[in-house]
Amino acid sequence: MHPFLKATPSTMATGFDLTHYTEVSGFLDKSGQRKECAIIHDTRIFCDSESARDSVLAKLAKIAEFAEKEEEGTFSFFVLKSLDGDDRMRYASWEAFETHQDSKQLVELWLSSKEEIKSLEGRTYVPNMKGWLSRLS
Figure 1: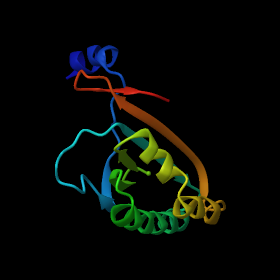
Figure 2 (figure 1 turned 60 degrees about the vertical axis):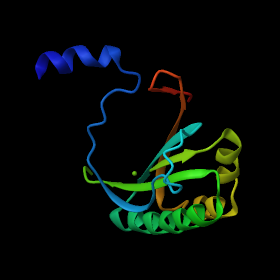
Figure 3 (figure 1 turned 180 degrees about the vertical axis):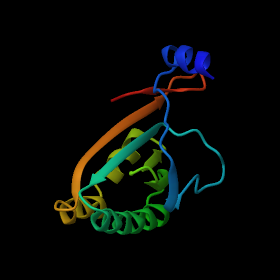
Figure 4 (figure 1 turned 90 degrees about the vertical axis):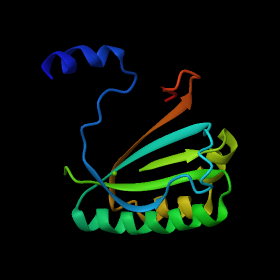
């Protein structure tokens, strides 16, 4: 394993994800058609306390319900909780991504969680026609 761990990172675009997660809410591939998405956006949310994290996760569950029912271009909205000590979303197009990011529900989440969220980071990936994803931001 040591030679593999030493040699592999130079060939990877994103590095190893050695974090352990459990599913909290959301959906994967709501159409069931396994369509290629145009964008994947990973967001990691860090909270000041366990109770703040539970509150944010409950709010994200409501956003996931809305996205599944109302946002045609949001293919997946998968909320995961880190077991080590945070969310994955896929979109049909850049326009679908912007529609979701500008939605009243998501804006209300951020505004109502300012005291609970310590920090936030996001990465956007797009297909590179090689079976892998290229990091956009």
